[in-house]
Length: 123
Image 1 (cartoon, rainbow, N blue to C red):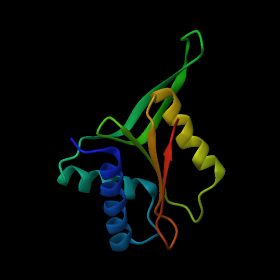
Image 2 (image 1 turned 120 degrees about the vertical axis):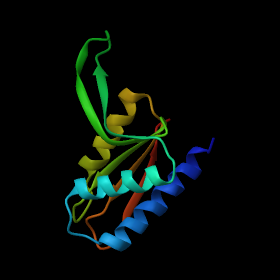
Image 3 (image 1 turned 180 degrees about the horizontal axis):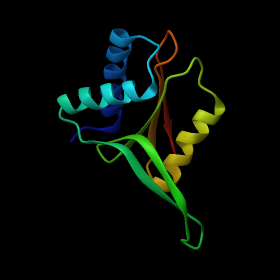
Image 4 (image 1 turned 180 degrees about the vertical axis):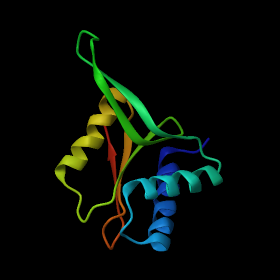
């Protein structure tokens, strides 16, 4: 079983390879499918559009989110295909980590000329 840092490195390297080949200009779904395809070829366990239920303090269900990718049951990956990431994109990823009780997440933007990958860790 690999550690979270090794897993993040694999996702980063795979994302870079996708960005190098496909460049910018595609919809987010194309990058999502490419990343899923390549991670599967590496033998990683992943789920696409993984549902996360959000609860209130009394355990009342408030709704569901769907993460772009949930990898090896320990890493949430949020993908973007835009010119610049924003605070709202960061908030979206952090909002996924909390209800899922997952500590690690990656925000990846394929839409800029330079690939953007940032790791977030919940304390």
